Image 1: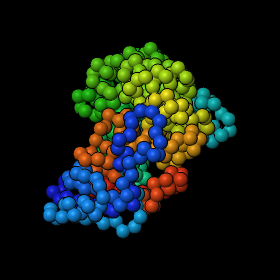
Image 2: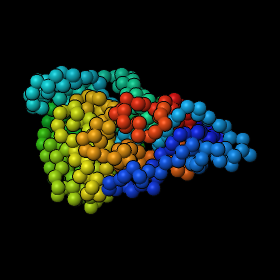
Image 3: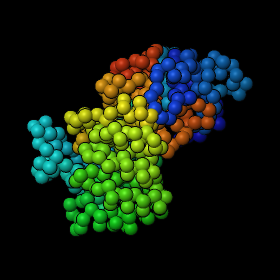
Image 4: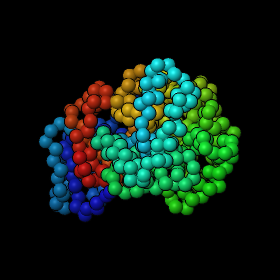
Length: 417
C-alpha cells in the first residue's frame, strides 16, 4: 500500500549509499565499478526519488521548501530495495517428510510414490480455504519484506486446474493490496500434469491455453506465464506450442529449464522469454546461446541447497556475458529456506562472484527479469524503494552471509521499518 505525500523528504546521512547505477545489464562486474556516495542522502516525494547526493548539500539545496528530514544518527548503508524474482509463496501444508526421505537417499520417484512431491502440496493447497492461503502468503511475504525484499515475484502452480489457478492468482492479488511489499504474480499452471487430469500433457496444456489464459488476461490477474520444461513435467515441443499461444495473447514468458535435463534454454531463446530459471545442468553451448540472447539467466541456489545438487554455473554465465539474476525459489519442496541474502552469499562463495555481481543479481538485474524498469537502482525518477543495513562498510552485508538484515526499509518513500 502506498501513501502519497506532498512533502519532500530527505533521508540520511548514509555512511555509504550504493546506487547500483551505471552498471552493465549483462556480463561480469567488479567492485571497483560500484558507484558509492559517502555521507549520502535521498530526496523523495510521492514515492519517487527526486535526487541522490551528499546529505548536507541536499539539505541546503531544498531548505526553502521546508523538507521533512529523516535523520539517521547511526551507521547505515543504503541499497535499493531487493528484488526476489522467483518464488512459490502461495501454498498450504509442509513437505518435511520429503526432506527426511531425501536425506535417506530416496529418489524423487520414490518420494512421489509414497505420497510426497508436488502433488502433496497440490492436494493440501486445494483443500485450504482462501483465508488460510492468504494468511500463509502474507506471513511469508512479510518475512521477505523484513529481510529487505521490496518486490517479490509469486507463482501460482499448486492448484493445477483452471478454476484453482484463477483462485490462487486472485489470492495473490488480494494479498498484494494489503501488503507493503509488491507482489508480482506469475501463472505456473503448467507446473506438472495433475494426477486427476484424464488425458496427456499436450491435452492439459491445450485446456490451459483455451480455458485459463483468456480469463487471466481479461481479468488482469497476471501478465506472466511460466512452464516447467523437464522430464516428468513438459517436453520442449509441447511447451513451445503453449508458450507461443501465451505470447500471442500478450503474456510475458518464463521457462523453468535446465534443472535436470537440457532443452529449456533453447526454448526460452526461441520464444523470447524474459528469463530461464534454474540452469543447474546448463552446458557450454547453451551458455553461449543464452549469452547471445536477451533472456535473463535466473539462478536458484535455494533449490541446490535444498536438493543437495550442484549450483548453476553462475561464474561461467557471467564471464560468457549473460545477464544474471538470482531468486530464492522459496517453495515447500526443494527450497524451503527462502532466505535470499543467505543464498546469494553461499552461492557467491562457491562460484567466486564479486559483491557487485551478487547485489546486481538481486536488484536491477532481477527487476529487469520482471520487466520492471522503475526499481533496483537509486536514481532520479525511480521508485523510492531503499533499505538501510546497520553497518559502516557495504562489504559487511554479504560478509555476514545473510545474518545481517536491514534495520530500515522505505517502500515508495514510506519508512515502513
